[in-house]
Image (cartoon, rainbow, N blue to C red; front, side, top):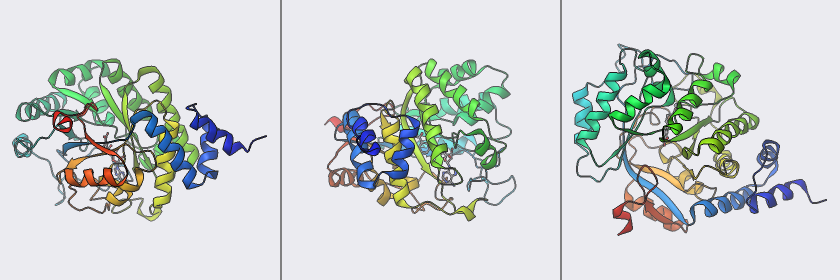
Length: 363
Ligand code: V47
């Protein structure tokens, strides 16, 4: 009988779906070159020779947070000299500075602020949309959403509908961390649950919103936990088709209360990216978020299944620089992404939030 690993590889090459135990075998036994070949095959089938990016900024309204996740380097307690809590006017000013720069997406996430309510967040979205009408608002992790909606006494469906009416157009993938309930209570004991995360994304999909999903990997989890996480996402995606992109987030260990764990190697990152691409055969895009991986690893990721590197960012996010990422002031120019694509043998495509090619890109 054919070697079992070769049998799994043939399944992937033929476009067939692999089971959790097969994914585990690939993770534990496949050489890196084979993972690269298989993930590249899946990427090509789904996205041809495209490398997607967008012109985006993040707005992080506050780093005050009700929750105290052990991996977080960003949260500060009230009164800390490093805490921030922007006023609405300051947020408007951040948006105004981006006028006329071709930004197509504003990604808004921050701490779960103890005092703000759903009306505040709806107002925030409306103001950003009125200042940057050409940009889509992709806002709030499922954990922030679940909290603000519950506090308003609404169902998830009613709360999301209010935010949609205010102008929210997509939901980022954050807050997923690790779905295994036992590990989740060890790394983020007081955070919203796996069930809450899924309720928000499932309902969003039912309302026609597109969302992303993430995993926080490289801490205390094993390959089994990672594959279980991917499997739960693949199952929901079979039903709803609402996830646009999967974004693996490598645990960065600077300045948080799990620092002693250290960080996994770049080889492990590449294996993880490939496994995600192979396993999530129904999620169209795999994003190697360059701010978190650093530009060098993001380039390598393009040989392991990634078709998207996120966007230009323009030094607008602190979550990763505070956790030890290479770029203290993250900025990616369009020329840099174009070079990255060409060197990988790919075609750079500027996209909007919904993975449609922008008019500038078509010219
Ligand atoms: O949920 C926090 C992660 C996430 C650390 O959807 C950490 O397109 C590593 O979700 N080391 C928020 N990761 C960011 C996020 C995201 C980013 C870019 C694009 C998209 C998208 C989503 O950041 C959190 C958490 O998983 N995170 N601290 C850390 N020390």
